Structures are given as C-alpha cells and as structure tokens.
Image: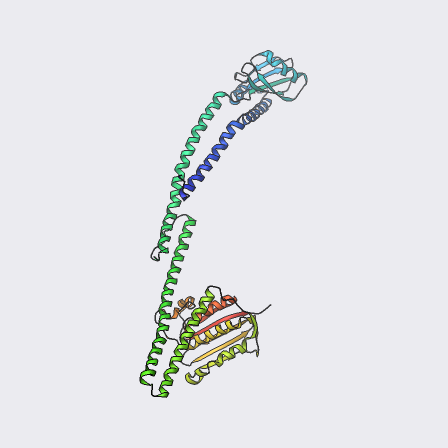
Length: 463
C-alpha cells in the first residue's frame, strides 16, 4: 500500500492544507450556522442608527430627504405616524421587509401608541412575503411616532451568491495552498537537503566540504555549527594521526634500543660482565620507559571515557610535593637541576584524590624539567589565599600565544618536530587537564616568550 513519505516538502504541504481547511471550515460554519443570526444583529443595529438619526433631524427642512436616504442606505421602510394612528409620511423605499397593508400595521401601532412606550421592537411575520420582519418603534416629539421595519431574513439571492463565492474562494485557497506550500517547502527544504548530502560526505571523512549558507536564520546557524563541527573533527583527525605517529615513534625508539643492546649483550659483550651489565641496565631503562608510555595512554583513555572515578581523601599537600621532589635526586646529582619549593605553611591539608593530584604535580614538574632554561631551574610555589594556588615555573623559551589553547592536546608540542623528552611521554599535559577537570579545578598557563612558563591550578578551600 502506498504511503506518503514524511519529507519536509510533504510535511509543509500537509500543514498548509490543514490550515486552509481549518480557515475554510470556519467560513462555511459561519455561513450555515451563524449567518442568519449575524444578519439579524446587523439589521437591528441599522434600525437603531436610523431611529436616532430621525430623532435628531425631526424638524429639519430636509427631513423627508433624510428619511428617504436612510431608507435606501439601510434597506429599511420608515413610516411617521401621529397619535391617531394616521400615517403622516412613508419612505419611498419599499423592500421585502415592508408592510404594504394599513390593516396589518394597526396592531403594533395601537399597542405602541396606546401604551405610551418610548421605544419597542416587534418581531412579526410579513404574510405577503412570508418572512420574518422586525419593526422598531420610537416616540418622537409632539406626539409623533416613527415605525422602522425591515426583513431579518437574508434575501435568498444574496445567500446563494455568497455561497457561490464561498465555493470559488475555497477552490482558490486550496490551489494557493498547494502553490505556496510548493515554493516555501523548496525554499526551506532544498538548503536542508544540501546540508544533509554534505553531512553524508562529512561522515565519509571528506573534510574539504563547506556547508552552504542560507538567508533563513535557523539554517544559517545549522550551517555554521556544522562547519565548526567539521573543523573540530578535522583537528581531531589530525591529532589522531599525530598521536599515532608520535606514539609509534616513542614505541619504536626504545624497542630499537632494547633490541640493539640485547644483541650487544649477547654477541659483543657476552664475555665482559661490566659492559653486559650496562647493556642490561639500558634495556631495563627503555622497558621502564615503555611501561610509563603504556600506563599514560591507559590513564588518559580511562579519564576520557569517564570510567576513572575519583577517590577523594584528606592529605597534606606540602608533604606530597616534597615526596615528588625527592624522586628527582638523580637529576640534581647528574644534571645539576635545581628545584625550588616556595611555601609558607608547614602543613596544608586538602580534600582530593591524592594519587591523581600526585600525578598532576609530577607531570607538571616533568614538563618544566623538559623545557626549562640553561639554568636547569624548576620552581614549585604554593600561595594560600582565597584559594590554594599551585604554580610550577620554568625558565625556558616559553610558549607562543597562538599555541597556548592547544598545549593541553596530546602531543601538540611535537606536531612539527618530535622531541624525545628527558622525562615523560608527551601525554602529561593531557592527563593533567583530565584530572583537574574531573576535580573541577581552574587551571591554565601564563607564558612569555624567552622568559619561561608558569603552569598553575587552583584548589578551592572547603566551606
């Protein structure tokens, strides 16, 4: 069985037709149910207007002309009578609502004049035309009376004409609905169809497409959003490729060295215990580096999938940093690195995930070690004010301002030229970002070229 597709064109056409049918239904409803009552109300209003006009112009020299004009204008019959029930003047207009026989008018005239009413309406049957007629009587000055009567049933010819016009209007409205729905749906649907086709290309990995614009605000915003999404996906794809290249490089280098030193230990230094020991130490060191790299990748993956929940506890931040600094004793001895730890508090307790905060500070210090200046100085500073501000400062070349928003991305610093870090894997700042965001800590970096960088994060105090 054929079924109409729920396309945008069909939906617009459907709602246009429903709207048109609703409007036409209201028109037909008024025609058949309310037309007679509306016609009656309008005639009553017309008669009252005529009556008020007659009262105001009773002694005017153009009184008869005014009466005739009112009769023609409002399609009513006007009779002026005295208190003897005699007709003094009748309007020239004689319509379907007028009484032609003097005898037929005696009853309502007698009732109105004899009872000295000021005004009264009579609804009667005009036997000559067999229609309902409304007579509105009002008392004038000097014992004069005006009787205004008109039919309160629409003229059949007029009703038939209105209904024929309504049929024509119905056909025109339906035709216009189809036409307008067609043009409007194309005006709206075509840009959306184009965006849909372009989105399919984007899904296939085509980042060269540019989503077309439109003068329709919502479609324009959608195009801008999709263009933004395309650019971000393109960046993500580039980062993915860079990540694969950099991880491959970091894996390849230690694996090559492990293999080379293993062969040396086997073939060249098998009889020399000292050299064989040095070879094995190098193999162990490179294996440790591989372990750190794999652990960093697993840690980052856990945090990005939100599967790594925080285990908060209260601990001493000062003691934690001192523990981390002790791990760099070998760098102090062998590379002459200097670690300055500046703080005023002997103890400073915070509530956080101790292992993760350890990882944040450890990674930031590693980053400072890798990029500090020729003085080999790394400064760790804690300022205890409204929040607890932790700063790790190096004296290196700094970071270009345009690069700062991207340094938290994986391997961003190695995008153009890969560098094998002295310590770490190139994923440290990405891990720092994830941990601090999981804690809802504010963080950032302040850097001046050729003057060094300051990485910081703020720990809110418990209320």
